[in-house]
Length: 404
Image (cartoon, rainbow, N blue to C red; front, side, top):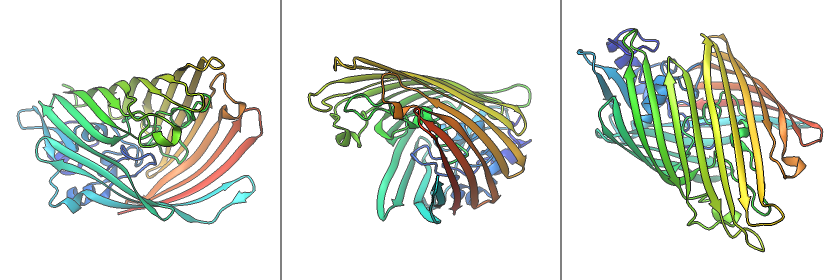
């Protein structure tokens, strides 16, 4: 019995379904599929990406969560994990060039390189794996992410430990796996609290994440059903903390649960608690909480609906502020037009309370993403956001990504 994705036999799955990707779990910007994996397995991106890179289907998400090991079945129908057979360290890495034309109302700009990245991930034996990303932007090199992972246990029930500079929200399909350029406000916007610029969940953080993974193969058709549970402890907003006046000894905690079923259906929730101290003059403390529900459901082949809601509360020792509450939500529809081309539309709303008017945002994002060739991704996108009670902004972005 083979695990069902778009492959029909175990041998075919083993040969091609270990698709190409390091989908940006490390990167604050959306790193794309890593063709180094495809070169090793002679695979197509569509095996683990749907409808287009960097969006992962559930096989791709499970593969990534297990440290780049493919869940498969042996001749006895038992679940096994297949390691990626890299021949050398260099086989695990790929190059990404991100070029953009961006223009706001009355402010067009020429085509320019937004970022150049070296990204990669792979295994080191039966239990260890790694991932890393180095970016060149504005004339400087920066280590944007790095992690090591330990995997222990059986294929159907195992424990993972991730450590490094990581993105704690590993499964946000509207974040680093988004089809467009603009991020959903739910993860991207800060809630100002006095002198503190505010917390946002997508920030990279140094820390440790412990996870429990439960994987089942359905009796009918071999479909995967996977449950991920994790607890992460992070070093606040470090390394950006000193710029915000935060003490580095503050620790943040996040608990997350995610359920995957079918080819791409997901539902999940997280709770986050953190703190910052010694902000401004006079100094004060901010204790912030965030909680969210998120998920997606493929209504029919080629039509996917995504949604998310996040609430928040900041409690401070500043008597003029005391407590600042916030909420944010989005709804997105993705529609495959033809193979290799997807239209998407999303509506965002972000409204912190007791905050400056210019922070509130709402409005649509509309665009088309395409992959005419394995090594080329194209995006055309329009975003119209109303900021506070002011006029609506109109931003247009054309993006071209070359990957090798």
